[in-house]
Image (cartoon, rainbow, N blue to C red):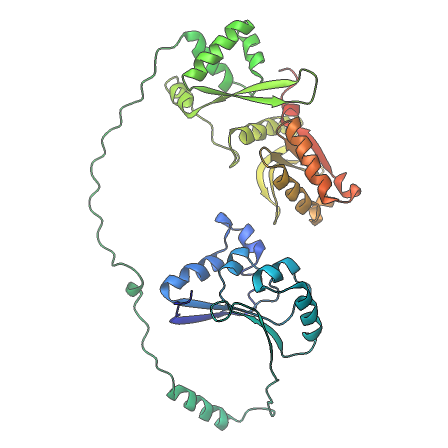
Length: 388
């Protein structure tokens, strides 16, 4: 940044919403188009001055990529951001809070020039009424004599010339994958998995009339071939461990030779997250709800939604798999939204161990108990059909 000299300077006036955290969170990839242009524009010699109402509200990415700050007020700002962004101490923040009540006080921080924040004071410009047009024109003329300008560069100057693409080499036809001969019973086992909702592996044994020893040998053989992977879930009940079976990409390639096609994903999560979404969907449809996925709530996204078409009542589900603290943060954000008072919210934990860690993370936040009553905690195992 020390050697960065912009050839074009853009001012984003009243740009708080354009470069806010909310804009980043609501954008694909976690960065808004305006912030993306601000950062990548530097390669084209474009500099940006952003006039904003709140330092704490703007995009973290934008703030971390800004070289200089002029802060006129610290009222209502996050002290942690003031300390880490401007290098202020708690005492300096409180001192400036008093001084900034009078116009003309500013904190300047530009580490390229000086590695510490500087308190500046300026006087208001004395403007004696309306500016006479002759005075304005004379001022403009004096200014323009000092300005060197040229015609804008053509757009081709900002990138490599577009050359015709060379003809793509002829693709060699990839040979179809080959699979070892496996017993018909093993093929039937795979077909049982994909022909119904996810169920514990013991249910598949029972459907195929396999004893426990035969069943374990079958799953072990398919696991060794890379066709399946086993996922164990605790349920919090006595003897309540269940095992669900994942068909791996290799397994789906094999099943494709039998006419089975892998279904499209309902969410952007991994296999366990997707399995939970499938089970929640099935239970919702069984109860007569309209089911949809990945519902944006602004700062939070719900994984699954049940909608009662008659009453309009909504039930939102989030699926927690690997990060209890992250899910606790999501719950806290949800409870701050107006919609939290109008719909049910269910956190579906991977298993009882995850649920315990989540409850511990929520307890550490010391949220109001009345708020926490709006959140219902369930496990993935709770959505496995009872007949299974």
